[in-house]
Length: 577
Image 1 (tube, rainbow, N blue to C red):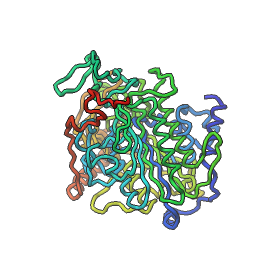
Image 2: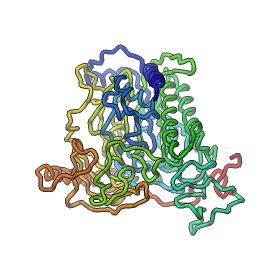
Image 3: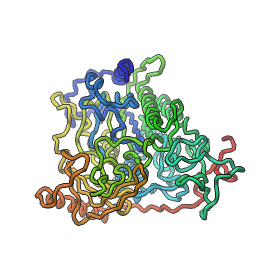
Image 4: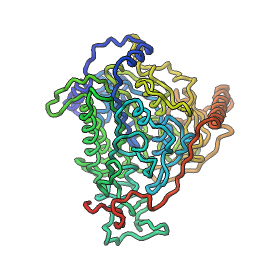
C-alpha cells in the first residue's frame, strides 16, 4: 500500500466520522436515560460470510487510532472502509459467534438463543421444507414491533417455505440469494475448490447424469450441485436464476443505498440487516483479475466497497461531490462475520489470525486437520466485529471483553427501548454498558485482562466433532474447556479423527496461549477449578432447557420445495436468464 492510498483512507475516515463536540463524560445510566428521551437510532447490522478474524486489517493494529502505527502495520489493503469504521468506533477482539457454521450461527444471532433452544443445529438444504421456527422472535420482529422500518439483503439460510421466509420473520422487504452461493450453479461459475462447472443448458447435458435422488451430478467433479441454478430473490419473487455472481455485491449495495436514502429522518427509524454472500466460495468479482491466488482478496475488497457505500449513504454523502446532507437521526453500524474461514478451500479462504488451533493441527495431539470453520477451536467462532456510532461511542477504542453475537439482540433492545419476549430464555447479554462507556479517563483497551471471568460462553459442535448442536467447548473468562475435539478438513482435504474428552476436558489458558497449543496439566489446581466450573455450567445450561420454550425444527427435504423460476427447466432457469 502506498502513502497516497493511505492518505485517501485516512481522509475517508474523517469524512465518515464527523466530530460531534460531546465530551463523552456521561455514565452508562445517563446515556440510556438520554436515549429514552431522544429519537431511536437507525441500526445497520452487517454480517460477512466466512470472513476470518485476521481478514479485518484493523485487527492487526496495536493502536489503530494513530495514523503513524497504521502506516507501519501489517494491515491488509482489502478493507480500508471497514478499517476506518473500526478505527472510528469500538472494536471487539474477543467476539464470538454461537456456532461455526452458517445457519446455526445466523439463527442464534437473530434470536439470541443457542441452537439447543431454537432447534437450528445444522444447515438447511436448498429443498428444505423447514426453517427458523415461526415462534422464534428475531431482531427484525422485535424492532418492527417497536416502530422500526425493516429490510434485509443477502444470505438468509433459514428456510424459504411458508412461515420461514425473511418476510415471515419481521422483515418488510428482502433482496438476495437466500442461502450459500455454492448450493447450486451459476453462469459463469465462480472459483471454487474443487472447481465446479457452470449451469448446463437445458437441452445439452453432456457432463451430467441423474443420481438416485434425481439430482444432476457432475461425473468428474465432487461436491458440485447442478440440478438447480442459484436464485436471486426480491421479496417472494425470483428475479434471476442463475444469479450473476460478479454483479451480486453491486446489487446488494444499490438495494442498501435505496433503502437508506428513501428513509425519512422525520419518519420511523430503520433497521437494515445486510448478510453478504462473500467471501464464501465460489468467488467471482466484477473488476478483479479473478485469478485463484488473488480472488479472495478481491472478493473481500468488494464486501468492503459495499460497506463504504452503506456508510456514505448513512451519513448522506453522495459521491462524487462528497457533499454531506445533515441527518438529525443517529445511526449505529455493527459489523461481524458468521464464522471463521473455510480452510479446505485453501487460497480461496481467509485468515484466522493468531488463533491457530495448534493442538488440533498437531498430528501427535489432535490428529491434524483444520481448526477454523466447523470446529470448536477459536478460529472457527472468534470473528471480527466492531460498532461505529459516532455520536454515542467514543472512537479509537478496543474491547477485550468476552462477547457473543447473541449479545446483539438484548443490546439493541436496550438501546432502542424494545421489549424482549418474556416467554423464553436468552443466551445473550445486554452489553450497552460496554458500548456506551465513554469516560475521559477510560483506558484505550477496555477490560481488565480477566475478560469477565464470570462470563460463560458455550460453543456447540458444528460438524467437526460430536453431535451437531451439542456443546463441544465452554469459555469461562480467559479459560476454555474442550469436551469434543476434532478438526475440519484442511487444505489437503484430510479429515482428522474425533475425540471425546467429556470426562477430562482439555483446558487452555487463552491469555497466554491464544493458539491453543498446550493444554494445562490435569494435575494442576487451575485445571481442577476450570473443569469444575465448566461441568457446573454445562449442567446449568441443560437444566435451563427443561424450563424453556424450546422449538422443534425439521431438516427434511422435498424436491418441490426448491426455489424454481421455471418448473419445466431442468435447472430452474428463468426464461429471461
